[in-house]
Length: 204
Image (cartoon, rainbow, N blue to C red; front, side):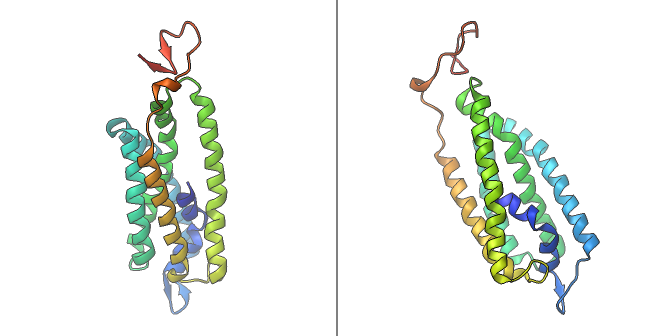
């Protein structure tokens, strides 16, 4: 969430700052607006594509994909994003598709870990953390950019510290995901009577 919203929040000035010719943006305002629209489509598409992929390969592996490949893509964006507009757009779109996919696959991941009993309340807690990350992402990005100047007047180098920080955030998430384990059965809570012999929402 933090990494994905970091790109979405600065998408328009970012693509203009990455590509400058003699100090002037080589990407027009209209083209930058189209880029933002394209990111929105990939955000939506990622919710369908990557959540469907999680049905086939599993929730934990798909989050390994989101976070592990996301690290590589952010590194490429930070170091080589200014080489070509097509490369920049491709990297940003895939990163944002992971953001959408992560949001869509989370309820199923929670169900796999905790069962269906109380999963609504658990998901509510996750969404609270998600909201905090949505608040933190722009703060982190803007903090770095403010130290370099105003978005719309920077170069690709001005974004590099912020993007590399997002690499670190993704690395923490990658390790955290690897450490996730199913809840031990001793912590299962009895489901309400008449639920068909299900404990903790997990069928015996």
